[in-house]
Amino acid sequence: MEKQDFGDFEEIKEESDKHKQTGSTEQKFPSRVRFPKKKELIGIIVTRLGGNRMDIKTTDGKTRNCRVPGRYRRRLWLRPKNYVIIVPWEFDDTKGDIIYKYNNSEVNQL
Image 1 (cartoon, rainbow, N blue to C red):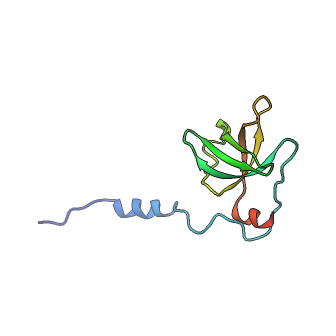
Image 2: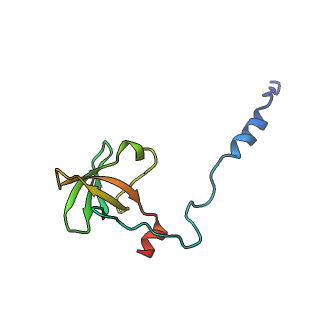
């Protein structure tokens, strides 16, 4: 069998390796931690329910069914045991919206 010529395959492969992420995304220097404002609460994710909904245990002792609003849907990747800031709904106190996720260094500073 003859060796086949694949053309620019090696060049394309080298170019695609340029875009791979390496290392962690955490900051090495101290940053300002975002604290909850009026009507916002800190919570920890207990379980994921599917469909961008999850159960969150908040600092006031309640467990709320919270959702990720559309503007944050692709930006926030959430897992159980992540710390988040939520805004409870005005008309139903058992539900709320997730508006911010703390990273590990911010949790240590809290």
